[in-house]
Length: 317
Image (cartoon, rainbow, N blue to C red):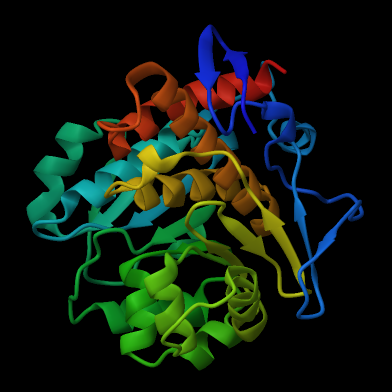
């Protein structure tokens, strides 16, 4: 696609400028699906459907209405991933964000994200207090990861986003059965390398088959990140998102996505809706950032900073 579209005073130019064609979650019946083989259909989602999922806040609201999010992230040398995830959750409407992190990075987190609170990672927290949990960004290779993941998968029954080192822990600690049998409402967000590790394969030949394999094998909503991010459901549906641009190929962009999806799940969107809406908003924020500052120097924090504007645009439609 080509052309120009104005978004909140910002002019988008290039491949993803026709927002009416952009991806969006389709709860509706599949219309004009494109068959990709493998006994399933892939459909590009539409902006109209995303708009139906993102709601204005009622006048009589308080912070507890918009989700308390626990972010299990960060380690020595990787506090930035936790910062990006937490800031993205707040810019996506989360009412409260609480980090579950090593005490040594508290000063960094509370300086960068003063709206968030911190709990020391050690004893397992009371997860019933939270409306959603995000696990993985910058988690590192701590020996606590196995017990942390086991506790979440065995006892937590709420919305859970697993990314980055959360996925790596499942693979390295052989927690596949625990993932399959978990009662949590799970979204996994692998990049291609993590997807290959989850499935134990060396090469991805068809991205749509890979993302569906993950969704079906582990009974989760799967998001395969990349150019044209794909969302798959265990029942065999695959959806294509086409917001976003090459400037988003930068470290930390996935941490931002994790925070957005977690925030939407904390605001009571089902996993599939939150994943698709989150991917769309994430890409739209990247498109807005590209329009303002260009793709070459775009950073994950730029994407994060434009997330609130992306929500404003969608709410204004």
